Amino acid sequence: MNEPLIIIGSGMAGLGLARQIRAHDSHRAITVITADSGDEYAKPLLSTGFAKHLPPDRLATRSALEVADQQGVVMRTHTRVTAIDPASRQLQLGVETSGFGELVLATGALPRLPFSVTDELSGRVFSINDLDDYRAFHAALSALGRPARVAIIGAGLVGCEFANDMVAGGHGITLIAPEEAPLPRLLPDPLGYALGEALAEQGVHLRLGRGVAALQAEGSGIAITLNDGHGLSADLVLVATGLGPRTDLAEAAGLETDESGIQTDRYLRTSAPAIYALGDGACVDGVNAMYVQPLQASVKALAATLTGTPTRVAYGPWPVLVKTPALPVVSLPPTHEPARWRIEGEGHDLTALAEAEDGRLIGFALTGACVRRKVELARSAPALLG
Ligand code: FAD
Image (cartoon, rainbow, N blue to C red):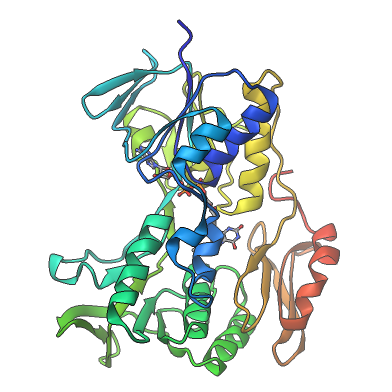
């Protein structure tokens, strides 16, 4: 009997792959196994929902049942794969065993929390990395019945987007991070400061250059002590201190992994036969980009490979667009440490060019009106995975 193709994960990578395979092959038996609800949604919209007061169900475009029906796939929702045996091509789902013909790991990334959350603080401290997380946070906000005081810890892409979105939604936002300027991994400091000023002009309270020393329950809210000795109170805390690829399942199965993800070649093949990986959990030929455009390129290449046309994936010079309407930001982080950043522009409209020793452009960052230069600059920048 032919065993099915099993995809673990129903994020943009897992469901995108199922859809793309169906475009090539209407008969192949496909099973999607997912630890969450399996509802289809666009994750980037999670950090734009609060300004528009969007209830969680409005973010789901299709239920798991509709996906199963329309795509002709078996959806196993709220089901966690607990082990993989690559030699016998079997999965363990708790006590149940399930065979696979080919397996795709689309297991994504999970929030890296800098501290553990005690039982006393659960229900007040959140991170949002999927629709179920959004549902839980949305419920906690709604339960207050008034605008919330929210402390966001972390000023990377997710922290800044939520800060902008939630302040626009009428909440009182404090943004806390150890770096002096927002978006430290995407922007050189002068552009980060411009974003910080723009967020402050919208009403975000910035507490940058300091970390969190302690969190304590205080009435129905939280008392936050910063490591400079100052303190503040909040109703809720949103932790946005970064994501790490989910590699535990692959690692336990003996697949090659490291902190950058499940290692694959350009065909998305892991170190085990018939097992592939893509999306936030996968490090493809040394690159784990963790955003949508590379994921979509991987979906297309792997769908072609799995339907009989082996296809190498390539990523172009695709910049990241940060959804901070207070100050639009575009960034293509340099491929390696630049010899210099050349910064041009005035006020909040800035262009930063990362140059190699020989003057070659190896990355760029743009803010405000300068974001319109993204297409022109991307033409001269190196591909992410050429
Ligand atoms: P995920 O969506 O994390 O899916 C992983 C799946 O694996 C889940 O279904 C999970 O349940 C399942 N799973 C994991 N382990 C198991 C197991 N053992 N058994 C069964 N199931 C399992 N990118 C952009 O390009 N532009 C943006 O504007 C942008 N905005 C973003 C905003 C936010 C708030 C966040 C968090 C990310 C954003 N990104 C953005 C990044 C982008 O959304 C991700 O790169 C992409 O959604 C990752 O999809 P994925 O399918 O790889 O992972």
